[in-house]
Length: 236
Image (cartoon, rainbow, N blue to C red; front, side):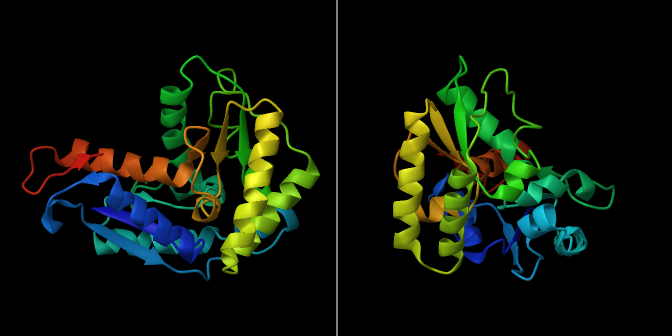
């Protein structure tokens, strides 16, 4: 059973679940995968921890993982890019494995840009500071363009707008930043904060939606794990 460690933030968790359902080819309710969603927004801020020494979210993340395990989750998806900085610390014999969001994005990049090309990240400052993508993505194949502090600040403002429910304002800001990435030579822009696709929904194949990539990876996990089982599903 898939467990979702959510709430980071709530709209991002809703967006992930919608994309999980949309990625599933099913004709009946029973053909969809069983999912347990734990949406607890009170997990300490990930970026505040990484940039300013704020409270670590690791104890709360570990507690959430244990709750999902007790509820029957055998694998976990975390629809928060920055939280994946702690993915290694959440690996333990008593906890379910995590389907890593960067690995899911790498699969989309391999399909979209098989020969490699420069890419841009739109993400939290915490994700960039922790090098969540830089540490896991093949940068020889897909080099990540550097970002100015002004660009990072602009994306951070947009993320805060989504969290505050100001979606239209965030859409305009994100769209401008994406165009700036294109102008600087990015062959694709990775929407590497799960708040961003809530507001920026158009632009494929230029955009790589990390939330959607993770949802599709989860569907494939379900097919690979339970292929042939009654009520099985297929990825779209």
